[in-house]
Length: 145
Image (cartoon, rainbow, N blue to C red):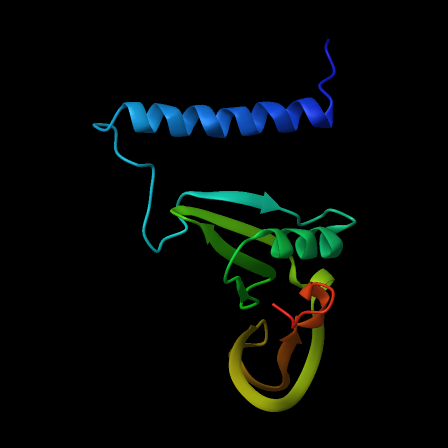
């Protein structure tokens, strides 16, 4: 079994991107895999579960030219941007990249099944949370992404 080095893997990957671009240019009847405002076809960095995801996400954020959008609305922290018509997207575990802040609480009442009765009404205190994801992605000497 042959072991492929990281450098060889990188070279093959970038050669594949160039070959794909050449093929698309040479075959105008083949539709572009995707363009426009959607991320349905994107170059992705999946950093979740990596022990260095915080640092790697910052590296990718600085790598993306132009505007970088961030989104912490799910259990992941996503960044995205574009190189011309090609979408770039990276994501990491939100709790590894951002700081969780409780900004308030509220009461929620719901009905849950109970073996002794059909339904029981329960009121719970629910935390209202915001995620601070700013400075970790700031390049040296620049504002946060």
